[in-house]
Image 1 (cartoon, rainbow, N blue to C red):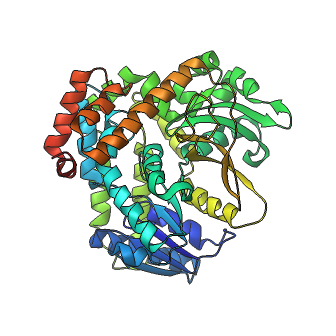
Image 2 (image 1 turned 60 degrees about the vertical axis):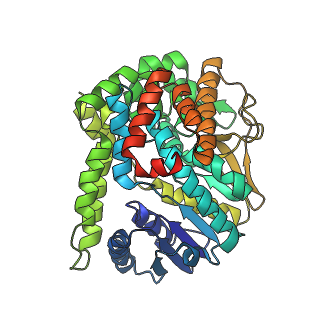
Image 3 (image 1 turned 90 degrees about the horizontal axis):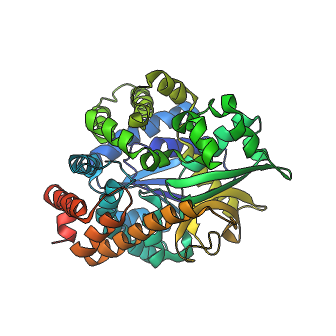
Amino acid sequence: MKLVLLGGGGFRTPAMFRAVASGGTAVSYDEVVLYDVDVTRLERIGAVIADIKRVLGTTTKVTTTTRLDEALEGADVIYCAIRVGGIPGRVIDETVAISCGVIGQETAGAGGIGYALRTVPVMTKIALDVQRYAPNALFINFTNPVGLVTEALRRILGDRVIGICDTPSELCRRSAQAAGYEQEHVWFDYFGINHLGWLKGMRVGNRDVLPELIADTPRLSSFEEGRLFGAEWIQATGMIPNEYLFYYYNQREAFEAMSAGTPRSRYLERTQRDFYEGSDVEPGAALSEWEVTLAQREANYMAEAWDGRETEQQEVVAARHTGGYGGLALAVVDAMYSDGHSVMILDVPNRSALPFLDEEAIVEVPCVVNRGGVTPTAIGDVPLNMQGLIAQVRGAERIAIDAALTGSRTQAVRALALHPLVPSVSVAQQIFDGYMHDQPDLREIFS
């Protein structure tokens, strides 16, 4: 099997490779190809991977290239995690939004729409190259915004595209642990779209144990989401929200923390620059520096949500599992090439999982994965307020796809204005003008 990592010079690539090289997968990979447009980043990540190979004693063949055709030729599995515009682009996404008085976040709200507007055209070109050079490859998308980009890719690649995000599985793991159960022994009723979902049930046998966990304030307050949202709010809704709902439920607090502090993008820009400019002369140095930087990144993750609660934040960070998306991506491949089946929360076409959305809308729900493909499970009733929020965000994201593909300024502003984290049409126009002024990639699309 040939595995291709698009965005191979990205900071998270070593976590993906470590999952491959650890030998815990049913599918074996003869070759791993790292593709990136930045030679310097490829070389630095290549040094980290060389250290990982040395530590694990693996002989997995690893090649690097800046030629997309060369990378894709004969690929069996393609894992895509690219960032059009790099971290500097993310800085603009977030800081322009904050300067306009709204939340500046990579995937939620204006920042997510801005990111998508310059990413969808690039991903579309990649999809066309995949059709040409790797027509039978499985395409696993981790490029943000995951749900939006996955929906755009499916217009070309169809059912070969699967979106992944480790946030739901980590929420489920923590919830099960707090309730006293092993994750593999529980069925999780989770529903939503990427970075906008809720855990509404945990079934052990024929019994839903989630109400017991939610009613038990000490247990509910023992893990990340319980602390983040507070027991009172979770008990009022009867469900445990995905952590990204903090930006919707606590808009004012999130914005105040962002505007008063350092945006995460600025922090990543500094720490990752230090890593990529580092020296890897001695064996093991690159891996050591990568692990230190990874720990720093993790400690700063969603820092605005823990503003004024630094002790809690440190405890939450210590309990996190990092790099889960790599294992999740490989587990999808294992399930599709092995006997039996697995159940995973993935970003896939709705079909009839959430009846209030059309069948092509990308949803994030438990799926049965086997040689026959990926089948989303039926979720059942969803509270009206959650239906409305999901539909509004998915609607804004779909307009953003069309705007990016047609270069329509009108539709780009419309996508921004219809997102629930953007308060008005005039603010949407102001944000778009700011993005156009600062983002050269965007100017090429909307010229």
